Every structure is written in structure tokens, then in C-alpha cells.
Image (cartoon, rainbow, N blue to C red; front, side, top):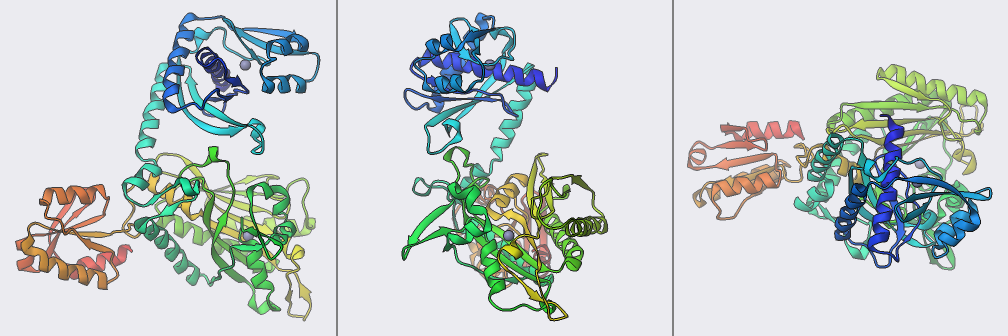
Length: 566
Ligand SMILES: [Zn+2]
Ligand SMILES: [Zn+2]
């Protein structure tokens, strides 16, 4: 059995789902039902909106239809005949019109007929190991000004074991889903009043701040300067940048003083305007401007997914303005910085891919050669493995993509390092070289976390909610065994806070066991347990998140250790 068998099976399962839907809800209009990488979907216009509980009935009916073991037959019929069969379904009628030639394919199982070019299993009884997974929103032809539809997702496997493995994995992923953890730990929420825009609560915001502040320390070390540019800028900037032509449907606009402004979907033009604000000399290069830019991008509601896919997010964007000769060093430094950050965040399985010159590209061959050499030399000097994606670069320059693997073996592309020969010309950015002549800088666009919100989600799932000490919003919780230790605990709290450690005191009158339980649920890395013994000796006992314990520790030593971990 190969992948092809699997996608034939999954596509057949989509027909089975459609048959079940039509039997239960005859007025539903079917559209298309392809196999996907992980399963299948069917997009439908329902007679009333489907809810999750409808999936149970649909799946049940699919099982009955599977048991009936209808042969799945393929016929080629005339378009005229097809138009009669599908006359009450405008979507199928549109598809029939678009298929070249005079005939179309018809798939028949029992008394269910679907328009299809074929590629199915022999009978419905061959589809045994399947599961419906959910409902989301979609649009006819993915055109969001068009007809909204509902998408029924499912998956199917060739063996019962494969389905069981899939379900186990789904269960594990669900357990550590960042949306669930975010709610459980009181980190963030989503609201109907701003669909797709995350609301960060104090603890979640604290994590984002820790990520930003850590990046700031790296920026200081590597001579970046931080800027902040407006969220709302003249739409002309994106027309000039080229973003507007391709992505205007994903942008938000506003009218101000009869001018059309756009809410920034990217930070680049803001940085360019800062660069351009005064003449630049070669002595200033490389000039590295960093910005935690909050950008807005319209996404279809059907693709929104917790913090992984949102309508507003923060990019740790930098723009490095340099000469072609400085490129190699700048790329190397950027990659070193990226590796340091990823290691600190607990990602050690990192891969790099260099994308080279595509067929149609701007800039001279010589420029490209020099830039690609610079990138490759930097990669070699870095000494980490990398692959080359021949011809996959953007038309305006080569790039390096950073992909990390998480604890559950999933790969995430997080960082990008993009060389750009185009925008300096386009936005007329110059510097004066050592001979007093004007030249164009090369621009390197980098984002290493990528989206901070998305990176936060990846971290939460990677650590199954147990963020490392330096990222944890509350690092230490002090628990007293009885009220007798309250004063000692209060003094200890103040000492820790003075030292910049994020600590809190459990002031409840609960028993110590339930205090410990509540700190565990909050996934706090360190619990300081204070009883009379500790008060008398001026020490603390510690219980770590993993259950390990140490007794009678010196407070100053612990503060030192906490600082090392931060
Ligand atoms: Zn088919
Ligand atoms: Zn940029």
C-alpha cells in the first residue's frame, strides 16, 4: 500500500461522507470533496448550519453505508445528462461547464451519484477505518466575497492499527494543545468581539515580555538598534512595496483626511522611512534596525487557529542595511544569534535551508552569485547542516529558512533571513561610499521568532505547558504549612521580588497538599515550602515542578541559582 492508495481511499471516504450527508440532510448542496495530506474534506452548502453533534449522525450513517458494500462505479456521461442530474445544484453546474470536452465523470454508489473524474476504491465496504474530525468555514472557490460554505473534515486509514495510532496521537496533541493550556493557565483568550485577535492576560503578556526582553539582550550584544514605527500608514507605501497587488484582500484599510491608510501587514516600509530620514554614510553600515512590529492580516475565519493563525501578531523584525561585502558576516552573525535563541528556548533540532536564484529574478547574475556565495560561506562557517533549495529564492534575493522540530516531532518554520536587492532601489535608499559616491545598500530582512504569538504557542506545546524558569510568568510560589510562617514568608517574598524574581505567596488557608496541587496545576517551576523548621533555621525547602524535593536550602544560594536560570 502506498500513498496513492491512501489518497484514493480518503477521496472515496469523502464521497461516503457526502452520501451520508445527502441521506440525512437531502437539501444540502454538495460542492467538492478532495483528499488532503492528512485526510479529506467535503465543502457543502447546508440546509441549516451543521454542528459538531451532527457529525456523530453522519459518521454513523457512513458506517451503515460501508456495511451495505455498494460497488463504486465510474461512468462517463454526456454533459447534457450531467446537467439533468445536477440541475438543482449550481456548484456542480458550474463545475460541469468548466470541464473541457463533451463528457464528464460520474461516480455511482447505491442511489448516490457524484460528479467526479474517478480514482476510487472498488466498493463502500473497502472504507472501514475512518473518522470525522470537525467542521470549519470555507468559501466556494476560496473566494471570500463568494458563497460561504461549511467544510466537513475527516480522515481514513488502510488499517485499524493506523487509525488507532492516529487517534492516540490526536489525543496527546489535544491534551497539550496551546489553546487548552492558554485557557487552563490563564495566559490568553479569544472573544467574539474581535475574532482572530488574541487577548493576553497578565501571565501570558509576561511570557511575551520575557521573549522580547531576551531578544533585546541579544540585540544589544550584536549592535541592533530598536525602533518603533506607526501601525497606520499611507496605503501608497504598500503599492510601492508590491505587497498591495498580491495581498490587498488580506489588508485592513482606513480613510483619514481623505487619504487611504492601511493598517500595516508588514514592518519593512516603516524601517525604510527611518533609514531614509537623513543621508547615510558607509561608516554607519552595517546599520541594524530592529522592531517588534505589531501587524494585522486578514485571514479567513476557517483558517484561524488559536495563536498559530491569528489576524494580528508581532514580528521580531530586523532590517540590516549593509554593503555586499558585509553580507557574509551579517548573515553569519544573524544565524549565530538565531542558534543562541533557539537553544535558550529548548530547540536543539534545527535545520537550515538556503533558497537560491529563481528563473526570473532581478539584479545582475554577478550580484546574485556574490550574495549566494556569501550566504553559503556563512552557512559553512556556522558549521551546522543545511540543504539547498535550488531556484526557490524570491525574485529579489536568496534566503535562508530556519525550521525547528518540537518535542512531539513536528516541524515548524519559524525564522527567515531574506536578502533583498530590490527595495533599496524601489524606495531610493542610498548611502555615500568612501569615495563620496551614492550607492544602494543591500537589505537583509530577518525574523527569528517569526510571529511572537505563534512562537509562544509552539513553546507551550513543546513544553506541554511547563515553560522553563526564565519564561515562566510566575517562577516561584511560596507555600506555608500553617499560618504561623506567614511573616517569614512575606519577608521572603519581598526579598525575592527585590532580586527581580517573579514570585508570589499562596495566601489561602488551604492544607499544604492542596497548595502544592494548585501550584502544580499552574505549572510553576519552583515551590518554596515553609514550615517551622525552615523559619527556625532561616532556610527554605523546595519542591520542583517534576516532584523532586530539596530541604533546608540557603536563600542566597537559591537567589543566585534563580538568576543563573533567568
Ligand atoms: Zn471521486
Ligand atoms: Zn522586511
